[in-house]
Image (cartoon, rainbow over all chains, first blue to last red; front, top):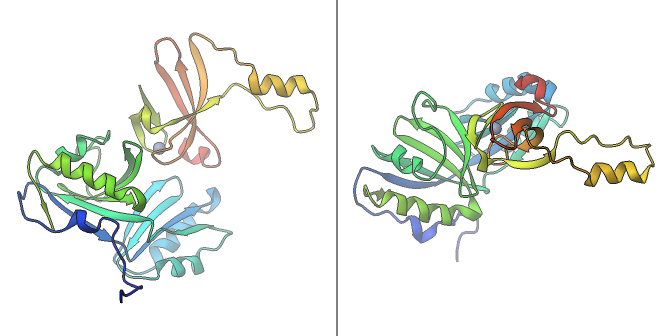
Length: 179
Length: 90
Ligand SMILES: [Zn+2]
């Protein structure tokens, strides 16, 4: 019998590991904690302090005015933040099951992304460690640059199969591997 | 056409949603004139030249802004944030 607590990827067979060119490396990841926090206009500074005050090795990605998407490699961040950030300070929304992270790296990573996403991927406009929110053909994307040639893309769970099919097709010309 | 989001910077217009004429003023809640409300909902001046429009950065930070745009040349003159975070974005 299947373990019901086990997380299942909507990508399933699409993202099975396979070896090919190392010019593009694709992989998927399911989050342990992914939380959006929206501060009210007069509580932005306070909420930012509270987010940074919770310990952990996590990515805190600004996605709008007074808004952050927080990816934590441990479960339970939503509850932790909800205890600290009450309704008088902002809104805490759990998105752990609502996004799948598609990671892309390799020397042709920016070339592939730029072929379908209308963002400036030059390092001067999109430095390592920063986040941009954009879209690919109406599929909203939060894009976190983790290195010069590596990105984590937070994709809506229900649309990630379609997005994965695009990124494989776009990566076909230089060649890719799935890990 | 590109619009400069006050939060995200210059972006392709496909990331934005048109939210209507920014010059139309909603009648006061205690205004019971049917004509005034009808005019607010339906009457538009459809100018050729400069126009003020509400846009939302739907596929980005979701900030609302007022775009001043030339409807003939598509030149964008300004993009000003509106809404609760407007002051912080100016
Ligand atoms: Zn924006």
